[in-house]
Length: 64
Image (cartoon, rainbow, N blue to C red):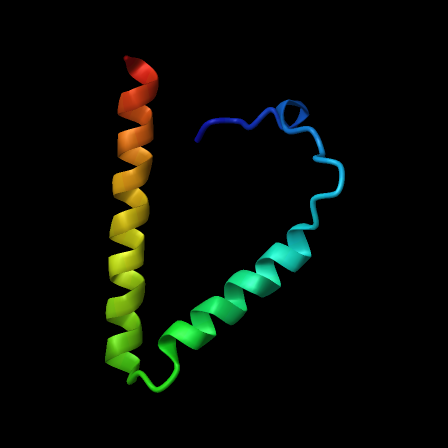
């Protein structure tokens, strides 16, 4: 496991991480409203795959 150098991550003035978290949770709740348990799992699988694809794209872009 790689040790994280937390000194690299400086606070961003005016950024409210708890507000962002609440907004994201509310958006997910709206998007999954009325879904069955299996549909919700599928939703998160797809979102996870999209996130992983974006991370891969950004890493590839950074290397070039």
